[in-house]
Amino acid sequence: MNLGGTSIATQRDAAILIVDDAPESLSALRKMMVEQGYQTFVANSGERALEIARRVHPDLILLDVVMPGMDGIETCRQLKASPVTQRIPVIFMSARTEAEDVVAGFDCGAVDYIGKPLRMAEVCARVRTQLQIRISQESQQEQAERLRTIVNNMAEGLLIIEADGRIQFTNPACDQYLGYAANELAGQSISDLLNPLVAQEYLDYFARYAANPETAYSHGTREVIIRHHNGSSVCMDLTLTPMFLRQPLFIGLLHDITHHKLSEDALQRAAMIDPLTKIANRRHFDSFLEKEWQRALRSGAALSLVVLDVDHFKLYNDTLGHAAGDVCLQKVAQAINSHALRATDLAARYGGEEFVLLFAETDSDSAYLLAESIRAHIESLQLPHPRSVTSPHITVSIGVATIHPSQLDSTESLFVAADRAMYVAKEGGRNQVRATRSSGDSLEAVKALVMR
Ligand SMILES: Nc1nc2c(ncn2[C@@H]2O[C@H](COP(=O)(O)OP(=O)(O)OP(=O)(O)O)[C@@H](O)[C@H]2O)c(=O)[nH]1
Image: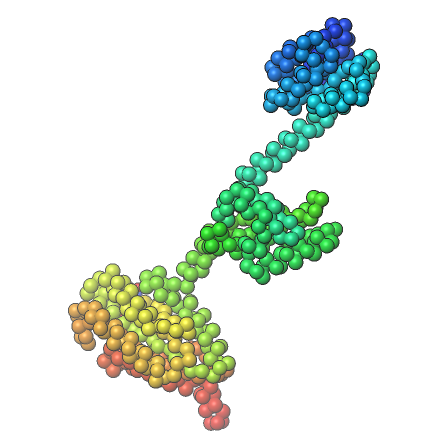
C-alpha cells in the first residue's frame, strides 16, 4: 500500500526512528513505514531513542510524548541539545492534544505534533512532508556550503556593494589584494578605495540602478586604480554586476593586473631604451623630435639638434677590444645624458658611436654653448685612447643645427644640417663643435619661387 503516492528515491532511502513504549503502536507504525519504503529503527524508551539516534542519525524521529522514565519532551530536548542529533526533525505523537501540550512540543524543538489515536494516512503524509522539507533544507545548506567554498577560495576578489557605495562583504582574495584583515572592509565606502572621479562615476551608476532596478545593466569590466591599505596603488580589472536581493546590490569582481601592467610598462620602457647605454634609443628620439617639432611649429620657438660622433672609435675598438669600446660608449652616453636637463631635452644613442641631443626652445647660441660643454665634459673624462692621432683621450666631434620650423620644413633638413656641421668638425681636426643655422626647406622653397 502506498498512501502517499510519491515515493522519491531519497524518501525511500530515508531512515525513520520510531519511539513508543506501547509495542502494538510501535509495530503498527513500523509496518506502515516499511510499506512506504523507509528504513526503520525502533526504540521503546527515551533513553534507547537517544542511543540509536546518536548512532544511526535517522532522517526523522516519530516520538511518543508519554512514556515511563524519560518522556518524549525531555528526549526531544536532549536530541536538540546535542550537535550530532539537533538537526534531526522530530514529530511528536500523543493523545494529549490540548493547546498547551502541542505548544510545549513545538517549544522544545519538534517540527510537528500528531494526535492519537493515529490516522495512518495522516502520519504518512506528515512524515513525507517533513522529509521533503529536510531534503530541500539540506540541499540549500549544501548549495550555500558549495558557494562559500568557491567564494573563499577563488583567485578573484569579490565584493558585495550596496547602492550607497557601502561595502557589505569581501572575500579573502579581495582582502588579500587590498591588504585588509577579514571583515575590515565591510562598512567602508568604495569612495575610500577609488579616486574621487571614478568613485563618483560608480556611485552615479548605483543611484541610477537603485532608482530603476528593472533597467539594470552590467557596468562591464574596467581598469581601475585601487588604494591598497598600505597607501600604495594597485591596478585591477573591476567587473560590476547588479543583483536585486530585497535591496539593490552590486557584485564586484576584482582581477589583479598589477603584474601584467608592470610588465606592460617595462616592455614599453624597454622599447624606448638603448640596451647598452640605457639612454633613449633612436625610435624614442624620433617620436620625441616629432612632438617637439609640432610644438615648435605652433609656438615658433627655436629647436636645436646636436649630433655627436666619437672620434676614431674604430681605432679604439681595434686597440682595446670591443668590450672596452662598449664601456667607453656607456661612459660617453652618461656624460651626454647629464646635459639633457629640461623635460624638453632628450639625449639618445642614434646608432653605433653616434649620439644625438634635442634642445627644444633653444636658440643656436645657447645650443652651441651646451654642445661645447658636452665636448669639454667628455674630454675631461680622460678615457685613454692610446693610438689616436688627434688626442690621447676619447673625444667627440659635434655638429649643431638650429631651426624655427615652418610647414615647409622637415626634420630631415634639420638632421642634414647637423650632420654636415659634425663632418665639418671632423674635417677641422675633431674634438670640436661646429654649428649651423639651418635655412630650412622653407627658405629654399621661397628662394626657388623668387628665382622662377
Ligand atoms: N664597441 C662598440 N663599437 C661599436 C658599436 N657600434 C659601432 N661601433 C664601432 O664604431 C666604429 C665607428 O667607426 P667609423 O664610423 O669608421 O668612424 P671612427 O672610427 O669613429 O672615426 P671618425 O668618426 O672618423 O672619427 C666601428 O668600428 C663600429 O664597429 C658598439 O655598440 N660597441
